[in-house]
Length: 242
Image (cartoon, rainbow, N blue to C red):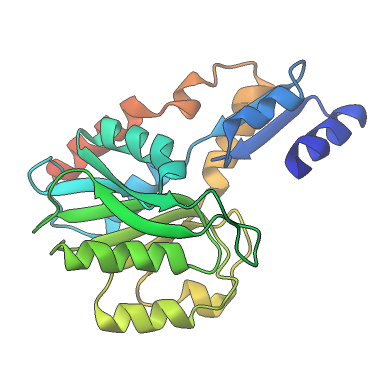
């Protein structure tokens, strides 16, 4: 509701186009049905930066999988898995809707994994944001318990509201290999320089989006970068510079 109200306020101020990245719920565009809201995924940047930093990935369903940490992130995981030709899994939280806890949330009574066997596979875990990081780290731990190989935690917005220390500890335990975030939100230098952190620079991509809109170009290739991802994978397989 806060986001919808903000969009309506911007529309009333005369804003004609809104560019946003990986909205938590894309239905918010219904708040301004007469204006342009371009929701851009960061899938291409995640894939590109992981491939740049990991030279020995085998991008096929026998060696990799995509996992959503909860049912709310299924849309992102399904899209990423389809683009890469991988299988997808998710963790489903079963809640008791008859009661609420002190945070006015329905408590989770059980968490079930739905998806392919992850033993020996490299896993990409994708979500829209990392706030405290509890959900991401729990997902990594559960995947390791299922004998997953390497784990890459991807989130468009890396907020780290409880600090970076929980991730330092989890990295030392071997729960994950890399955390991949974008520079769409501010992050302190100490976070960016962590040995496991990969930051996706979207400056060039934002410039391309603005240039495309100013020249009345088609936004479809930017909203759905399947062809760019496939070209990227071919270059990776041919060991070309990305």
